[in-house]
Structures are given as structure tokens and as C-alpha cells.
Image 1 (cartoon, rainbow, N blue to C red):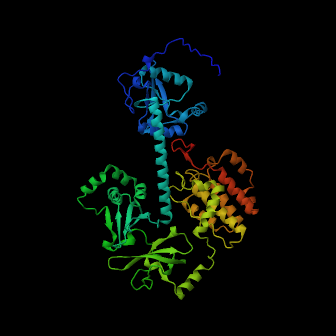
Image 2 (cartoon, one colour):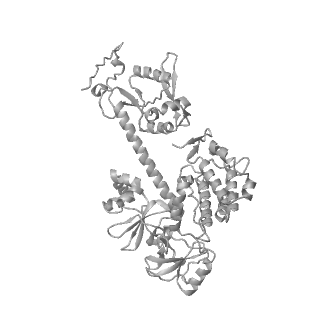
Image 3 (cartoon, rainbow, N blue to C red):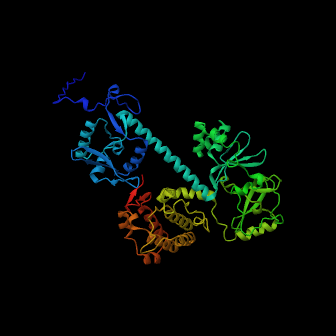
Length: 549
């Protein structure tokens, strides 16, 4: 057996336990006193205080300052301007200290006892150690446990917010045509781009659409479904309604309406509006909707048809999946599936856009398709974009917060990825470069583009024309010009210093255009993507650029 030498600990002075005792004060979380648990009580921030300070701590900022009066008594002070907490970026020494403590000092609390508070605060000031405080009295282990719980809660909220924002962006871009689910009696449930907060239910037995617009009415639907599908999906998409289900407050709200749910539940068929009010129709320009129009014909489900594109520039091959009618039996819409396209592009269209596959319409389709037969389908775009995400950082920031484009969805890549010769590797590479450049512009943070002052100003008209030029770039020279225009509009503060020096070694603009080739433009786009500070934010007060929390 190993020999263990005894260790004798000697103390020059005995610790004064009274300095840490807080008679008559119990922990806010566990309800026990300091003597019962054997731990001193600390000052810990409440929920709102914690959420306010954690944002600053995550960005290496200091929001607490120490002030002393004439008697030498120290106080921990927070400064607010217009109700907003003011913070400053931590110094290099402070940042090095923050890296050594867990959670950057947000759980390094001060004692609740006023005597121990003064001594500990004075020691922290001398050592430059991080410190936090709050209005709650808690034990250290309770503080750590609650801190970790709050962290997980914030992460879950952030994930939910990002998912909802992503869904909203997708729905704004192309509309949602896939139902949320189907219940046991065959009713379909929809969340549409025209009103993301409303729930639309299609009751097949009576061939009627009903819209629920308030959380209380949607909560009643979730309760009625019980464990049936798609109740979990509805609870996820409508958190306000789910909260009312948990606390049963939806009953009170519905009873307060005295049975009148005209604002909550709307029967579209009662006014023969059905699909039109749900933004499921998209009548093309120049196509009159009248009984005399030869396009108003009955087509049964399963029939192959042609669908007129919204701009009346193409006829698309499709198959009718379902037919919608109003109370009088008149057809108000068709649900179609586009051949050779994924089912997620299935949608409802107005009857005026549906044509029979007769000889005249097929000839018209062939004429409209001339020169555009090499368009890449949606299913073919997905693997191409997936491969680009590995090489181009911009694709990972297309839905980041605080982008220069705001809430506007990223520019679509279908036109940029078109090729005339699918067997040409050079055309495929050029298409990938066009899409990459569009992704870079779509992912730029707010403030990265010049809106005033000298140089190229990235105004709305210029941006729209630039995107058209990029999509239509037919060779390396045209695409190089587009890259140079975007580079000239960038604020240099958003380019990494090391990358800026490397970009400065590239050929001048004139020489780059004259000697442009696939390799040179690819290097220029790749270097630009690596140089940009994606995901950063600009402080509106100081104008400084900082990493996002």
C-alpha cells in the first residue's frame, strides 16, 4: 500500500463566519437559509436582469462599474441611456480574464451580506476579476443550476426563432403548397405565406375551407385533435395557441365572444371566395376571367394538362391532383403537380391558368420553350447548391439576422444556374460562379455596402440591375465586371485585414477584365467570400463592427 503523508493545515486567523451570515434570509429558489444548506447566500440576477446582461457578456463587454462615496463605501452601478443598458468593450486584460472563468463571469456573484459584499467587491476591483450581481438571494449551487437552465432555455428559444424565420422566408419566396398534415377524418391543415399567423383547414367531406385567425380559435382546434395528427405540428407552429391550451385560457376567450367566431373562423365558401382569399391563386396578366374564356373548362383529377406560368411566358407540363369548387359547384381552382419536379412544388392554381393538352396548345408550348430548353429544374439545383455550400461561406449566412437585404429572401439561383450545354464543364463552372456571387451579395451584413459618400453607392436600382447582369453573364469577362462592381461598393471595414492585403495583390480592374478566364474569376470570387465578415453586426451608437452574440 502506498504511504500517504499527513497534511496539516495551519491558519493564522480564524475565518469570521458572521461576515457571511444573513439572518432571516432564505434562498429564492430552494427556500433554505444559509445555515441549513451550509453555503453563503449570494446576490443573483432575476430573469429579466440575467437576459439583459448575458447579451453584453457574450460579446466580451462590461456593463458594471464600481463607484465609491466619501466614506469609502463601494457600490455596483449600471448606466442606462434611454432605458437601454450601456456597456463598453472589455480591455485586453479583462478579455484574457474572462476567458479563464466559466460563462465569462456571468455567475461570479457577490455575497448577500453587506459586510462581505464590500470586502469581496474591493478585492475583485483590485484583481480586475469579473463580477455580477442581482436582486435575488440564492445559494451558489442554486445560482449555477439556474444559470445553466436559463442558458438552455435561451438556446431553445433561439433555435425556434431561427426555424420560424427560415420557414417564413421560404414561404415568402415560393409560397407553401404542402399541407402541415391530415387528421384521421381526412381534413387538411395549411399554414400559408399570405398570413403566417392563420390556420386554414380544408374539410373534404363538405368541400369547404375554414380559416382560424386568433390563438384562441387555433387552440380549440389543437384541443379537438387531441393526440391525432397534426396536433404536434400545430403546437410547434402556433406557440401562442399552445400556451392557451396548457393554461386552458382559450375557453375564456371563446366564451367572451358569446359564440360569435366571425373573426376567428371564416368560411370562404359562404361568399364564394375560397382559394382567392387564401392567396392560392395567381392569375397571369392578360388572361381574363370570364365564363366565355375557353380556358374555363372542367378537368377531372388525374388528367394531364398544361399550366400557364405567372408571366404567361411558358406552358408547364402538369397533372391535376384535386379540384376545388364553391357552393354552386363552379370550379375555383386546381391543385397540380409539375412533371419532373419535386412534390414540394405542388400548388393550387386558378382555372384560367389550366389548358388542355391539345395540338394548338402543345405547338404554342414548343414555340415558347425555344431557346430555354436547358433550364435547370428545381431537383437538379439542390445537389448543386449543396456542393457550393461546402466551398462558399456565404451560403451559410443567407438567412442570418441583420443582413443588408433585411427580411427579403435571398435572390433565387435558378436563372444563374442555367446552362445551354449540360455536357460543357466550363458552362457548369460558370453557372456555379454566378450563383456563388449572388449568394455573397445576398449574405452581406447590414452596413457592408456603401449607401452614401464617395465610390459606388449600392442603391436599389443599381442592385437590381447588377443581379440581372450577374444572372446573364455569359463568360468570364462579364462575370469579372460584376465582381469588380460589387467590390467597389463594399465598405473596407467589412473585409478582414489579412485578406485585404492579399486582395490588393490581384491584377488591377482593367487588367483583370482584359485577361479574364474561368480560373481568374473563380479565384477572385473565392477570395472575396473568404475575406468578408459575415454574421457581424454594426453598433448603431458607436459605428463599430462586432461579432454577433
